[in-house]
Image (cartoon, rainbow, N blue to C red; front, side, top):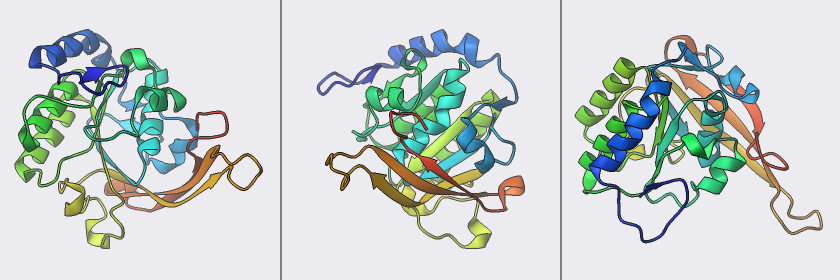
Length: 241
């Protein structure tokens, strides 16, 4: 399903649906700067203070962090997209809560075809069209597919955000890679990992989760090889970051 609102039983998008979205987004997506902006709270985690076009960023352990990473570019007018099959926590209301503009946010929650091939095709089409594509790779994604998507992002000047479960510790020599169990084995430029998390709200008389305080570690390769850390609210009280 490709939509700006969740649906349970809608059929998956046809190829023509995705191509049509690509046609609407492309004029905006192609007219950008070398760096896409991020929210101020995230700047210290990225070596250039923004998302470099053509790069691949891994996010481990938090759907909220994925949405927050797109929010700055979205607020500046960029189109962003997500391929989130089987991710009920990623829905339009969550995107809005984190600052993503729904009118420029195709959300693919199902697609025609099965297996890694269908996923790779959807991600490739979106990389042709929008500035930032966030996607949760399926298990056993062929390395050749991952390499093609890295090349596609670089050629189109898009940012590919690959997301998945918390990968845990990684040997220093592999600091720019996502471990195999995440479904993505190709090297990445920056990896953001939630290393600590604490909710507020319960125990304060309301019985309701209001905000989450997280510590995020950033590693990678090149300029991102030195670990950086930041404490964020995902979401903050009243929404946002």
